Image (cartoon, rainbow, N blue to C red; front, top):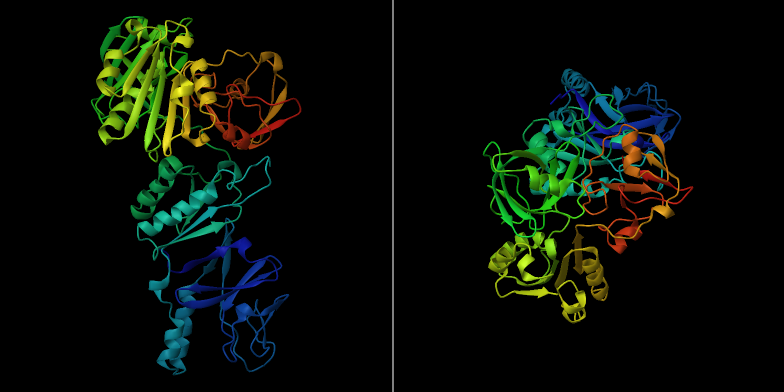
Length: 563
């Protein structure tokens, strides 16, 4: 650490005409803002030791609050007594909105020599020496600037910086960093398009961050390990985000098992024999299929087995190309690329019991859940709705996992002969949660019959979109990409996703039907028309996120997107 230069504060912390006091290694320094220019002196008055940093500043003259002696903070000269020694002054510099004190140690040492020559007491000398044990090694400034909703630049606060800074502070305490690191809340650091952002001194390293994992990596690798976190690093002068590419996994097909009714189960392993990334029950992976497709498939194996991913693929009729390509082309020994697992349908670990309702191929996410619920000895029951048992997907695996905690409803294609949802969901149970996955009709029925349950206890995932066609309701509207400072017009026959891609902005997507959440985007302003099947009613009402593959806005509306 450079001991001749010390950080004092953010420049906006001391307004023009104001004073402040800072501790530099046990030595009090007074800072003054004179019409936007900063000056620093010793804090104690030469007369009786009054605190100049608490005095009244008039222009460049500060008045000691104790006996009224006046000093020019620029020259250090005492204006009240001619025989008074000038104030000790320290050069000040401003770098990226941060106030630094320069040549501190050098000036202190020079004054220490002067004290010795004048034969002052040891206590006088000690008062000049900074106590390095009290000085922080690292200063972190996290921008928490807030602007009005819908501001074209957005703000770090709107992107979650307040909560993330609080998490970083809590994690720092857990790691015992209290005496080494000072976590500061900062005003605007003028990198709004990149936020949330932080700057770490004395190195002057800038990072963007979006999650608890980002914060953990900065603490573990940078603060504790002294290594830069390359994936979060901001370059000097950078004003727009880098194009980020999602990590891909290369998988090899180790086995393919065919079932009746155009269903196959694939076992996928790492092509380089590594352990696969972990996942939680209910998760899925996105497979890159051929040259143009990316499709999501639930992981049906035991999530504790990291040697393999297992998926079930049924040929869709009509097919959009994904399932047909897989079933017709992917064979043992072939390789395919995948995303890391993503989970839009996780088990709530606060629940005390689980009602699981599956329809057809919607059984797939419940298989991994079954392994975990059984392992933990929790209370659960699966209701499996199928046309007939002969064509029920993965029925042997389902029976093996769920055993007596299972009822299969074979309705012959007529829901009236199947499950009685009103009876199953009649009485909400304290701590109970409901999970449903299957065709839109089943999901809608479960949500309707569970409408008297607390909203946060009802979870759903569906694999096909609603049959309702909204295209005749489409209107022309505008989107503003806050990180690009770019305005785009979304035509009636185009989605937001298509419009943004046409402007050269790469956005990943998968289903493009509002089902998978891959294109989920933070909304910073505007009133959207939500058309997805993921967000809850309260989430749609809050309008903090939008699925840009299907959702739109009315004519004349501008949606401010965190893109």
